[in-house]
Image 1: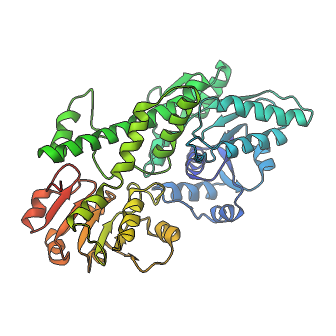
Image 2 (image 1 turned 45 degrees about the horizontal axis):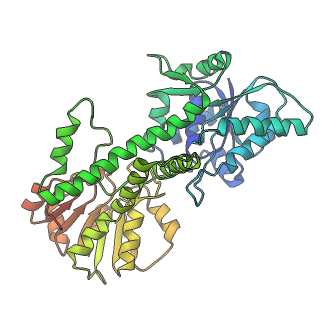
Length: 445
């Protein structure tokens, strides 16, 4: 099949590379010419396990190509996938300008009837209709009238596991009104729908809302556990034992049931704000989602508050080692990352930071530039040299089994602030360390 993907960002690249891997002829349209040149050279611009190999194979087999020409892209594809960003506006709503710009470009260049426009960008309810109207208006300006379909097909990709999620999806939601269009979409996804039926057919509005609702539910579980962790600290309970106690109930399960330093990334914060704005625009209150957002904002400052209380508010000239900068393991993405709240709070209080992350150091360096109170280190061990305390912000596997004795010998104050509850408090204590976790370890009331 001939597929065009508009947007060489996270969703666009993963989708394009995975479709090419199963034998389709895929062309990616990206307006950033420098990015196109790098991709043509086989340079993957994002950190995502498995993606560079897929791009390399796609280029080698000529099943994957890149262009900056919308006209070429529209002429190429029978399926036209919109996978551009929807950044948040100041009021929390989703900015649809990039999506509608692609839709207009499709209408300006479309020549064949029967094309299927697939909206993979995360968009609010009603965007499918806006895309259809925009394409139709651009066609009318040219004096053309062509049949085309618009399908809502939200992505459910986890950063750090996106390739696996695309190739082995839990579900494939297709929002369209026509059974004929559904059959064509079913054929498109057939290579990823072999072992059992994963396609869920619904109307476009329900498909659009499903994406926001899914992210809101997952984020709610995280904020719920952070609320329970705060209670655990006050009553002397261990949130990890509580997690096992409630997660063992099959009605609840363990997924996203972890207390921590708060969630970040490009999806949850943006999508929760967009869902809340959508509700308000329809005259509704979104009280639960608004509470989840508020809890998360507060939770991102939790590690700093713990460290500040430990030093009794005297952080000037102290040095904090920080393990983990990406918002989650398996990515170099620092958008809305809890680490940024910690770094900025420490700097404001006069502290210095020695930080290590396996993938995100370059992104942090680009964000903040050179500064005397930030040293980006090449290993976890280097980061703790000369540090007073250690803060763990991202649960990369390399941090799970540290040399506790070395930590005790190196950290001047012999204290660990575990923002992801990945270390064992008793092992830390036996090594002579003070351990402070989220809802476990020593209390800092």
